[in-house]
Length: 146
Image (cartoon, rainbow, N blue to C red):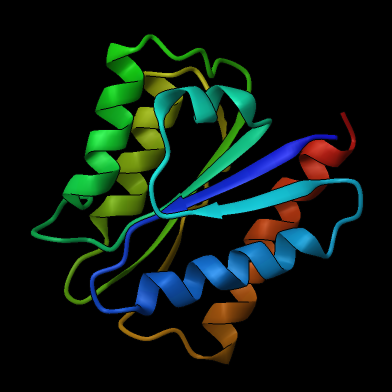
């Protein structure tokens, strides 16, 4: 069964709410194992068919825990080429983190990324949570077909 891994960090709880909605959307697709994690070891990334990272934007960057996971994976030479990758996150004044994560997934790890990152200003409302559910569902559908 294909596995979708959702890895996130949250400073105020907003990105956590988004992560839970991403998982909810992904679980609406049958035949896909969906796992939500706050931290993963590099090897866990290799075991997934697709990975969605969530990070709030903090000082125009992704948070340190997410950056550390990506750097650990790079040092461990984790093979993610060809897997589906996506990013989401909340922000207060700028929204760089999901874009930066997506670039790393595509350019460093060779993942097939979902180009449109999902960003939400402050706390996600019903419309924002629906965007997150759609992201999870879209990625799950892509790996369910494989």
